[in-house]
Amino acid sequence: MKHWSRGIAPFVILLFTIHSMVAQVSVTNERWEREPGFVYPESSEPYTPKPFKPRQYVVYRTIDDIVVDGKFDESSWENAEWTDNHVHIVFEGYKNPNLNTRTKMVWDDEKIYFAGFLEEPNIYARFIKNDTFICYESDFEIFIDVDGDARDYVEIEFNALGTFWDVMYAKELDKGALPKSFSWIPNSEPWDVQGMRLAVRTDGTVNYPLDKDEGWYYECSIPWSSLQELSLRGDQLNQNGASMRVNFSRVQYNIKEDWPIEDWSSVKGVDWLWSPMLTYRAHVIETFGRVIMSEKTVIQTKDWGLENAFPFIDPPKGQKKPKVGSMKKIKGGSYAIGPDDEDPSGASPRGEVTVEDFYIDCYEVTISEYAKFLNAGGYDDYYWEDMADPTWCGIIKKGEGAYTVVPGKEFYPVCLIKIEGAKAYAKWAGKRLPTEYEWEIAARGSQERLYPWGDEVPDITRANFDYHIGHTVPVGSYPMGKTTEGVYDMAGNVNEMIDKKWEEYPWGKKREDFTQALKNPLCRGGAWTSPNNFLKATYRDVVKHHYMAPFVGFRCARDTK
Image (cartoon, rainbow, N blue to C red; front, side):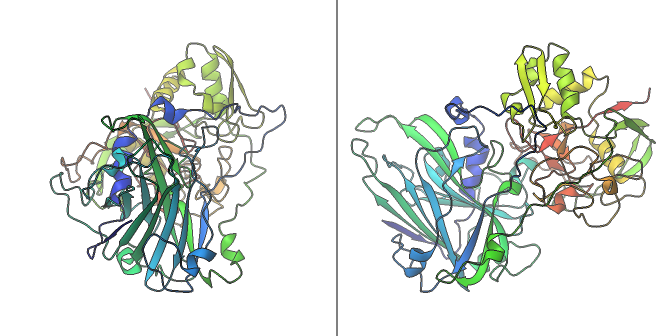
């Protein structure tokens, strides 16, 4: 057993970040291996999507003192429940893990505690230096965002030897965050999780592949005071009903079972998470699980109010049939852009731009419109088989250039597409994608609205967001959320791609010390998965995935001439 303690706190975030940034960039075929025999259902009746929300876990209070030693022999641990097993990082249809990975959590006034087990018949680990890329071999990772706002979140990675790395991100990695504790990057400040303790215990031999091991255990404690420093809202974390966004990731690499081990290169690599990300990326904060504190102890009856927190609501009904493809003319002139007050880097301050008159779609591009594009012939490369999933999308491929739409899904926004598909559709339709400035001008108008409808805080009468419904809804379902000019759904439902990569505004603060992550397209408006701060018309988001996601779509624009 190996035990580590740092008075400086360096264990909460780094490892997850690196894995997401590096290990997930090269997505190999085995990472996309399908569950044997899985097929998406087809229906001749109107289909009702299945609601989805991140996994939840209610954390109960301890009943005795916890000693972080990897043994789990306290009564508190004996009575705490395990989380659900990890699943494939994306969603249903991809091959689920063949090994168990579970975690327990408890808390007291001073700390939150994590304890987990990773089933592993062949335990191996070779990294012995802390604060290095642990995710280059099999590891376990903890992500914590105390406010759930994609700001000041942490990542902790460690292996079966107890070697660990912790990192803190001021904003999401894909938006050019300069992580703290990246010692090899200029200007990356040192950072530690003060007072964190970690213990790892193995049940089997390490680095001896000729026998069968049971697995390895970890136990970790983090002081509330260290986490409280990361809260921008300042809400007390260690109180009844407080919640955080948390996820657990297992990076699983297999190596050749030779003895002695001379070749440490991976022959297979997969990513298993507690709460699925809905895309192949670990830095998608809005898909992290919800961890909720209960004042009750682990031996009292369950707190059913918290166990059933964040219920779904029914989607809006009775809206008029949208005039898909219709557009609104936006008058040109000088307009304010920004500030994005969710970006702490100084990259997105307030500025002013001048644009020509332009048209923008009244609605997000729908599934039926995209199917017409695919049926025009020659566009099969812009279809992905997961678009057949009737919950996320609902386009069925019958053959080359032959596609049908799942009944009832015609007016839902298309998703699970890449920027190349969006641009190809726009060209086919005689349009283009909007520029970033055009999108924000259409959403804010000359009044400089904070949200498309005005300055009122988002609620369920104006937008589809934060898993209230658990899936997309037909475009135009929120007339109270439309702009003054008559443009719908510019907040929530699906993020809308912009034909531009994330970068600083021309008048913003530029930085060249950490730009590796700035490679994905911009997107705007938030989605059905997004917390309300993502719905601001000034919020600059980015496509946080390497392939497609069920919360990203697009709308089109065109010139007036």
